[in-house]
Image 1 (spheres, rainbow, N blue to C red):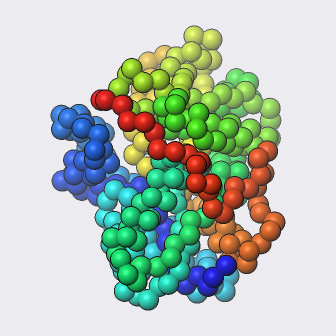
Image 2: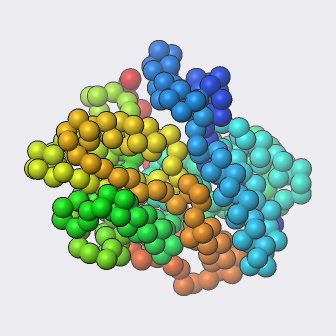
Length: 340
């Protein structure tokens, strides 16, 4: 491929002070006519953590360690960082790249799966940022989905084993509940998201030292209750397991790269409260981007190398093989908008 002179880390973004919370949520929900009262209600989740989402600090660490690792691999490539919904905004970052003379960049998105919000929407974000910058904006190609990359699977396998150790129970006595962000059923039917989540879960379980029962639940749904979303919800799944006399479980958020707000609130606060209410003990596995792990950085370096060298052998453990470098034009279409 053409010479690449920079890497662009692209993420969702999050508030970093209490006064940022509602404006951030207004950005996230723009065009959806969400009442301000509802934004304030959701803002209480952020208030629980001091009005600060953990995702931006995690991105800062990823950016620094990735640039360091690339240099160690003989690739002197600056790593920029831009967000969809909060500072540093993607358009501002692309403008800085243009000012710095960057002609061609590879974008890494903090989303491992194929879906509209996890892939197609980021492609649109990148293109809108380039249009905003105008003449001189760099060409930007996105790295492929990486849900079944060996390093990604190994990270979640290690984290699952660590959570089992914290719980002190493994095997059938403590099933694993894999979680991912729910989607409207109509959106899920137009992409490979559910199949990829199941593939990742299967690969993690295959790497565990002992046979373990497992299931998949969904979290963080939003929108009107009349619209069907992927089920079961994590809280409903905990209640179901408790009804079956299960006393402990490990929760593994394989749908997420980092411990951002939807992980720390929906799982560490709400799901733990549900578990206590139904008499279950739970432990949650950490996501790779939280520290971040050495494996996550190694995976990003590998994904960059495969594009820079046009390597035909791609690291992918899943049944469907590695995703293409460029998505087909009709994949992961935008969801139909529903009234709130």
